[in-house]
Length: 249
Image (tube, helix red, strand yellow):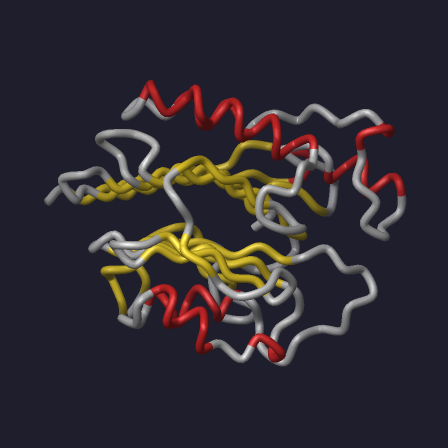
């Protein structure tokens, strides 16, 4: 997952709203968003190579999402980062307790968002201790929480405006589809070649081998209803199927 924007207590009727793009090589095998085999109360995709997930939400509202930290020379971690989210969604520990108990040395650089029904917690093995987040709108890509990358600044601004239209999610999917490349002068310098910095500067990434494979909008309404919508894409941003999972209280 390479871009997540989340509204926490930023809407009177929707305490948790998430808009996210998962960027990955198209060749990596993945299962589409659906109730999980053996754990049908959990909704999300599955990374079929390592077994974890980039984003998922449970019937009771428990939520988790992860992004990697862009570190071209970093050694691969002992465990897949997708297991961080999987283990949280299948467990019942409080979000802060779970994040504090992690052996963060076992993973390559990660950013983690966890919601346990009471608190939204941010954790990272590159950004100090885990911490609960105050109500607001937050953006996360492949650096640290709210790093001022051009695509994060744009996405957060559009997300805040799009909240007013809920439950209509067209504006949220529209911001996730923004494929504008940032000017070179505004690009971060993360150690990848300039061509990759340009490619990855868009909210919606597209090329022949790597890009945004899924755009997801998920929310928990105050009455407890859960909804997850996933739109999937192939090489060069070609639209594929979509999924909608909704559960009324």
